[in-house]
Length: 373
Image (cartoon, rainbow, N blue to C red; front, side, top):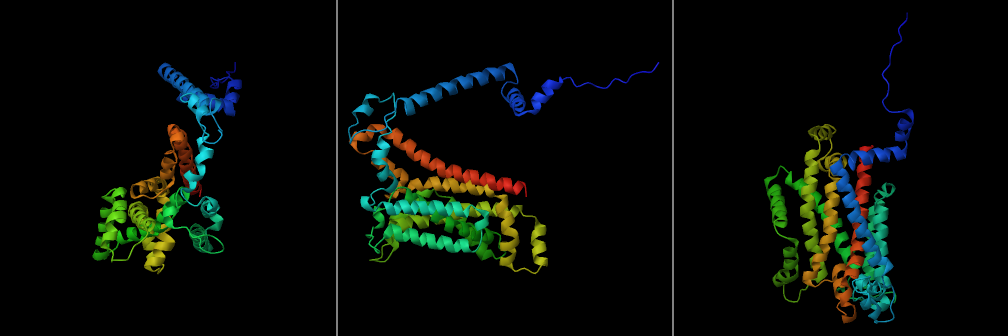
């Protein structure tokens, strides 16, 4: 009598196994594992979903369903009638030009608008690997000169506009872009200097980093705006925006130097030895072998520093420079619109979020490319 071997059977039915292999089955499995794994977890999940649903409904009713989108002139009676019930988005079309461009001459605001578009185009082009060539530096130089010509004017029929009339989003982008564009190379040089075998260079770099990182950015801006002119010869006056820009470059260079130094320490010693064996000079070794690997190691902290630095540009308020957040605060000084500051801050917050989210997504893309290749 022959015996039949009993094979181990899968406890799950065939239909259920097929369902779990589909996308819907994977979602159900994830929900069971992460949100409904136990009775306590299920109760907390349902409670949070209830609170989130109530919040979304209230936000929908306030921001869209009951909102006022347009009013005639400065007649805000419709907005005041719905205060606390619906948002008054009519303040945005009424004040958006002042928020975005400050006190720049109204008839000439196409110039800062074009400058903002050039900045965005530069960011998009620079994010494409296919454009990472030497010509990109030339493109940046030409674009930045064009932005300066647009903002100042004084030729080709454009009236000259002094820097104290600049404001809003162009000023924020100028401070952030120039600060990072010059602060990043400075940070690389300082990071290399901190690892130098020459005591004088190493000590000078350490002193610079510890001094800048040891004080808040507000202190640097205050020094640049108030104290620095006291040390200048009589009759010499450097523009306030330029002084603030120098403070931002020094601040960004110190923080980026520490991030890059961490990446340099993560590069294996064998890479340095291999570069020396190839007979590369100090600068060739760092530019071709060490720095590319170091920067790939520190992409997330680099982008975190970029994002924090972009948001820190709002601190120029204390020295009287009208960046995006400052123009938003000034726009609601008008008594007719003072009660609707929340809508203005939401509008400005969306602008900051778009730029910061774009940097964050780009960082994640670079990390994914690094992981796959």
